[in-house]
Length: 146
Image (cartoon, rainbow, N blue to C red; front, top):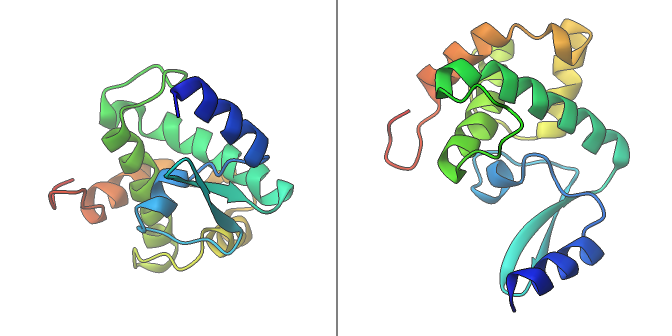
């Protein structure tokens, strides 16, 4: 399947693409609201609820902004290479979990967001500087480094 046909199939099959798809597919996190979908021998992740997708999109944007200096990529509108995006997604979520509970394993992204909102009230109020530092200490990429 060519890339154009794949994108059309994807758009038709996935109404709500997961904001943390790379993290879910790499199994560094899981989410009760995610659903895996197979299209043309590729695996994608869809979000089951619009409310969850909305807050995940907001959180992902905040994480992209928070990681700009650490990644040396000041323009958050430009797509990141796969490894850097995984660092934002996996490292960012693990960093939030660490700041919240002093551990980095994430059993459910949706539950993590519930806890995050209970702790700080709004996604904008998360101490992102602490999250980025926790991510640097706890996220180990493919080769074990950060």
